[in-house]
Length: 478
Image (cartoon, rainbow, N blue to C red; front, side, top):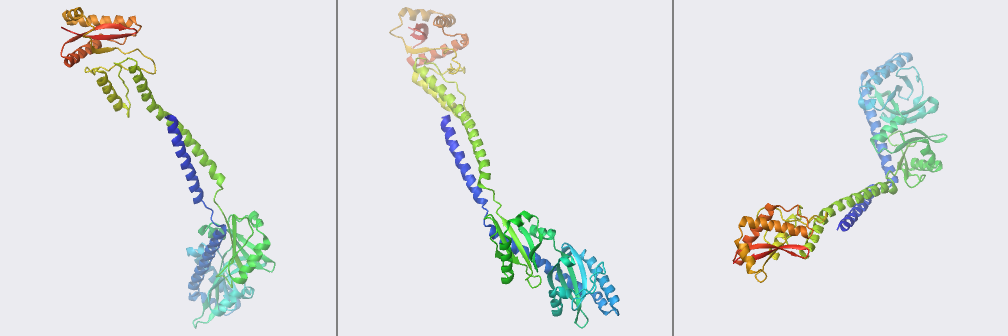
């Protein structure tokens, strides 16, 4: 029984463990790193486009202030530059009150004339007179059209690495007087923020210059080792294709668990100079990483099943074995033996089995409430207290026995038969310490009453020794 219980539940644990491993492995499907890289690239570009649009709208609202036009009406060049620096300082101070702009890290505010020549910047006299429109043609073209716009300014010689937005400044007649330019930081922190807002994939920012393509910023995770793992020629070829077609391109530059996507940065200038690179990696753990914890859990489950099966089997098998040995003893002559087994599930069955044995063997059930004799299977305790032969001995008992028993005083009869029974038990080597006079007398009285009702005449008992067994023989009274 115990082995069957353990075997069945071991199979259940194995099936559940294997199924759980398969479902967990399937739920952690790494998917397609290339598809992940493509989604990361689209999301990052969208965030940068939105940031450019927000900067342009905010600059347009600032450029509409009449105070911003005042430097353009100054009488001398110095006065215009000083006035432009003052306006730039005021705009830079206003960025701290605009959460959207402050979060972009504004680092430069410049007033330029209609051709893009710098009149003054915030906090410094530098840049005055610089032809920014000539260096960055997108600025001059935007002011000529009277439109807001954005561009990427990356010029190592000028120590510039910015994402720039501008808005035209118009006179009272609507003519473009110049422009208000805002530069925000372009560095690793900016790309890391974008990556955290989107996919969490590694992002690189590339620009094209006379020396080719150069990574100017990278998000957290874009380590030099990762950059070195990508074939430079493959990446440059992908970048060239992306700028020429205006579409994102896959770069076959890493093992299958990596995906690399490069695309032009839209919304900044003509889209022909700056690029975004997204690198995604399959993050599902290897099958062996999952296998060992599951094997450990399955092994623990089997051990617990074995322990529980042993305990459960023991609680069921012990009373069954006691019943089996007790029935064998009854078959060998111990007809007054009854079972005393307390068990939550088998207790009712044992009680009915005792009643069935009493009916089949003609033995009266104890009406005194005293517990019947029990078989101690495990510790081989003493034999039963009473072994009563309930068959009438009409042909065996002599008339003298019947007369003598009938004439005997009841109290003296009960005392004598108890003493005879104890002596007989001792003569055959049976233990008698557990037999009390009161319980013996109660059992004899109950048996005599039942036999008298059953056979229509009173009976008394006498003790006989049959081999190694002591029995009480019923003798009918005249």
